[in-house]
Image (cartoon, rainbow, N blue to C red; front, side):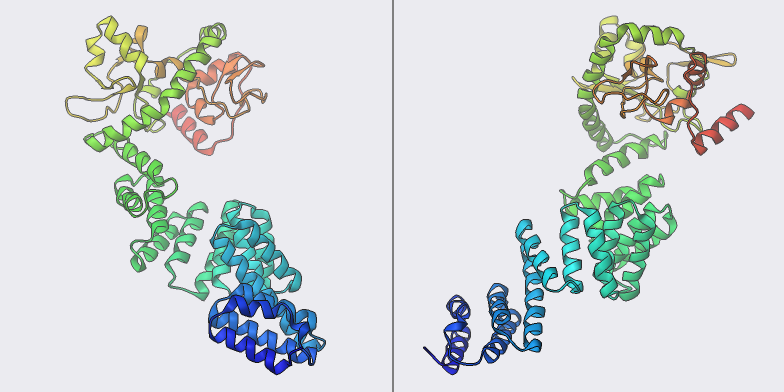
Length: 478
């Protein structure tokens, strides 16, 4: 049996020669050494620290700390071994998490907190892992504990804010962003997360200031470009939003949601300003949106056919008040839906309706769009809308497109009929209880004829919507 001195020399030699695996074999069997256990345990702790700090060999360091825990009799040495073992587990959990070995990472974090429940970094790192796994409630619990133990961890504050954002606790998220920025005021990533939290708190001016500050420091920060672009789009500042969303896409084409938001901004920029000329980019985006909606159109045709009798009964009860609000840009309707399904275009071709088709830009086999094809601009009102005295009428009523035929009854089930509260299948948008096709949204109530029809059928249910009430009040006064 070798002496302690010989055993130490062998370990130090192997480590100095970077033969870590061989050193690890000796670390696993310290009981074969003659000498005092506490002396060996102390050496093992120091060896583990060298392995972890200088060599980056955390697994081997963990072996040394584990062996020290088993051997140590002295309380101080044992506590030091336990503390370092806990830290090593936390570091390994972080390393495994970066490698997306999430199961192994969680085992390490659980063990780290078993050994030392008051290790702040373990709580924070475990919280981050749980956030990646979308276990937000568990993540919230660990961040609370970690920040209670160490309130001066700026990164933990910002990660906790992200968790709170996913839990829709936006005010709390904003508070923790403020704490992170108090500790690190110039960090552009913290400014970005704060901007997102403020945007969700409906504080757009402050959010804009945060995104500007972040981009001033780091112009190529993807999240800041995307967040600022999304904020500007929500404020209907579409021309300003486009460059930031486009840059996000250039920086990272796989950035979540960026393509969808950019396409929306391109379309809305034109919709918000009928005088703006339609570009080739707009046409490409419109084609993509129509391709995406094509399958939904085909599904809707099947649904209409399935409930043909109920559909007919519904329209026999519906009374259009001919206010023209659905066919022109007003304070209530800011964007006229001129999307055409391919069947509309085919029908007009068969009917020889060149008077309609001259206003249609056709996407072959997909659908089309109504706009001023001579000047390449959107219409501020439908070109087929006519005014007769104080009422409006449709000049192509007998062959009007599908989008007009179904208005104001939509094919968009959200599981609950807003009129009677009955459960509606996600696969079927017809309510068997009140016999209506409805979109479960207060938007349907923008149509005064819709409200009148529902009232006559005893199905009207007032939906609280302050903006809608304001518009309705203004409409009645006007």
